[in-house]
Image (cartoon, rainbow, N blue to C red; front, side, top):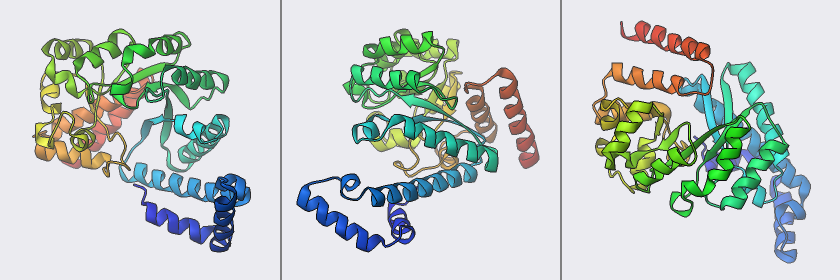
Length: 316
């Protein structure tokens, strides 16, 4: 996880003459009411490069420490674009770093562009159009994240319809802090291929039966759900146990490991310790995660075999 104090210290140490340059830049920013980029673009670029390096190294450490071999992560560009960052430059940086991580650590990373419900439907379609205008092999689809109450899933149907038509994968956060109707909408209007969170499915027996029958993957984020306390108050009360027992396609995720101060390993430990998941059931959850990926059946089988081999070695 990224420690902001350590990151600040890293920037101070790595950017040449930082204290002197930032003092001059701050004076200019205050006098002319300018951004750092306008006050001293060279300092801005130097800081940006150093922060990028720091964040990438921390993310690599997280992936390695948690023994992640394949990752499909959300990429949310909206706030950055509104602050003046260029989409094509962000994508170029991501692709470069993803290739380096694959070469140096053997970890595969793919991205899902979060079209975001927070900024409305027009912004969501604009984000999707950026994806089409600047295609990237590392971005395999779109997702719908952001404040669920601000943007009902069905309002974004046109964006998802276009993504499906263009051959992209599409997933949606639903049932995190809005009732089961949000999950139904993600299924019926967005044709989402995975459901992020899905906690409020516990309130609808018909929905749980439907999810168990269709095997639509549910991306459960225990720590995140307890932190927000919208539906779940503590780990032992999380419906992941019920979902699993009803034979729903459950996977374990972190949501945002930096913000929620968690790791993937900690998520598995919590449900083992507080939701009474056996080690064999933990293994099944790991296998579920690989089988929910947007990869070929052959690749899924290979990853699952690695899990089986490692499990037998550790627990035999």
